Length: 304
Image (cartoon, helix red, strand yellow):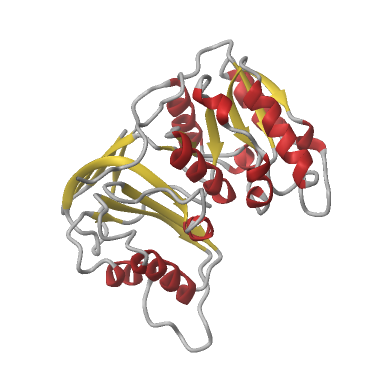
């Protein structure tokens, strides 16, 4: 009998008047996040800024202990209903083991972010079954599309997310549903073999990345395959793989061709071009929650 990991815990959806926090678990902020505060306040939320929002230690938003303590403060505060990670970059892996997440068992709350925050999401799904939001972060708000911000609001306040995407010639058709996992491919590889390595079996996997060489994408996907993480999926959603690089001697395959070559012996649906990742239209998805995927010749429909 297969086991698919812990049951999903969906934190209470937000309502007007709720208190939310912004903290920096990774790289320091280069500019104030006034636009983000104004946006959240406009949604009727009370915004509390962590000390890391204005801190700096080398490239980080304070040293590892300082960043961990800032997150811990908001985890332990029962009045905080959601924790926004202000930005990604690098650094979550340095502080995550200094944080005690056990309070989330009795008082689950939303964690929002993407990129480097993938490690945090995977850790919370693996160890607590806690659903998290993959979506825009405070630093990205000025460049975000209105549509992506509306999907973030909908995810936070408990409205259904429905996406219709144009077909890609390399899509593999089919229908499936399952718990959504994933995020940034590089960070999933960083989590592999650790206490934050989520169970892939029976899941819908979502992937994005930025600034990688094509050969590196190929290698990371084959690492997942060799670890047995791709053969038991229900579906595969490929989002933004932006600013990809190639060598002087071309790799010889596009991103979709690389993906389909890796998963060619499996039968589950695969779709490309989902609007998420390091793009302005970074639409929200809820990791750790059931999602349905329908891939036809004319359209891709994703509902959550």
